[in-house]
Amino acid sequence: MTTRPHRGRLSPGSQSLAALFAQCGITLTDDQTAKLWRYHEMLRGHNADLNLTRLHNFESMVLKLYVDSVLPAQLTDLPSPLMDLGSGPGMPGIPLKILHPDLEIHLAEGRARRVEFLRRAVADLGLKNIHILQKKITPDFELDLAGVITRALETMDLTLERVQGCLARGGRLIFMKGPGCGAEIQTARARFAGKYTLIADHAYRIGSTRHERRLVVFERQDNPPRLEILRATRRHAVQALASGSNPRYKALKKLLTGRGIKKAGQALLSGARPVAEMLAHFPGRCLTWISRGEKQPPPAGSPAGLDWLQLNDLLFRELDVFGTRTPLLCVQVPDMDAWNPAEGFAPGCNLLIPFQDPENVGAVIRSAAAFGVTQVILLAESAHPYHPKALRTSGGSVAGVRLRTGPAIRDLPEGLPLLTLSAEGTDIDQAAFPEAFGLLAGLEGQGLPQFWRANALRIPMQPQVESLNAAAAVAVALYEWRRRAALGAKA
Image (cartoon, one colour):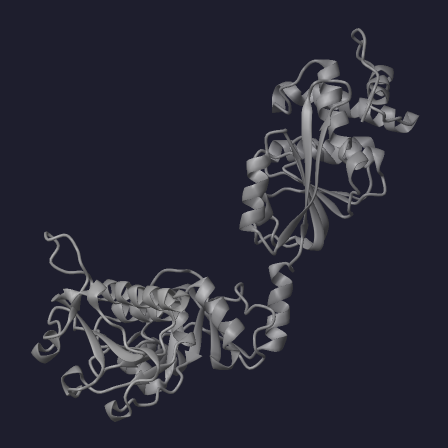
């Protein structure tokens, strides 16, 4: 935007105000000039009592407050209805309304004394279809808005979160910022990827001054929560629970133990990412969406047969043992067929797990998925792979691994092509990995039965360290196997 430079100071007055606007490329009508001048007089008249602005110089007030308020309309289309978030004494909302009377505007301001000023200003100026919201806007605030504009000082990502309940899908959030907001933009884009898209980023000056500004516009891609809730209630069977004695709740609580999981054939999955991946890749296994109240609905695209169970805070916290505060997913545990040692091992690595700690079970299953083992054989000693701790440690990867059940570690017959791990074994870099083999680490604390220690492998380490965690040792061994396989493929 190019303007001719301003020369000399102007005396305060309506014509001087219009001249400053004209120097910035904006021509005011007589009615607009009169209303802006009256607004200026009211702002000056109440500033001492209400601390409405720190600017006192006439030209600075016109350029930095009123002109700056309306410049966004020169750079982007203004949606309507439009909320001025953190309006303060009415900027940018009131100047925008004066120049664009067809806009429906909501002035959102939480401070009571400033709200009283806004009411007086709107009435005195005779502005129509402009609403005053005396409240602090939070994500729970609901209103159908096509746009939000703000000069507020909080970071962009916080504002994007704040308007979750009131900005419609396709609505625009217009930020009036200083020039150094690049880091804010990147943070907002990363945090709200898929929910908001950056559609404009304009650098500009206020008229011929050296005051640099930046107009940043995000467009919303998802629906406000209330619409998602409405759609979810139409799609899913909903039940609200407030009593711990409810039979359905008591059944869910039993899924916090391995015995309960084995008996019911169901498990509780927690964590936003594992839950989302389960819904996306194994929808047929998903049985019940479990949330705190009604404000965390199943996502769009969830299987229609998924029940939605709404718990009060106390009941939800009892099931949310890891404190994720995100919805839980009750899933069907897949059948695990039995492995008989007589059948031998399939080509590749067959991982045998005897671990009694569910976190170790989850950790080695995650390694198994990462390195592509053929199958995981859970020995009789093993904790359940769908125990909440195992699921959490596996990061949800358990669903993509073939799981089978096997005998107790003491019942594994001699003669199996089995590579075992022990602290007193031969260095693993001397191992030969057969085309089809089993990999076995010992029980936590007890280690391997004596027979399987004779030809065991060890992970080299510093002498002052007695041994590795069993799950860590398995991960290192699987890496070495995969590394050797890759070298062999290149030979």
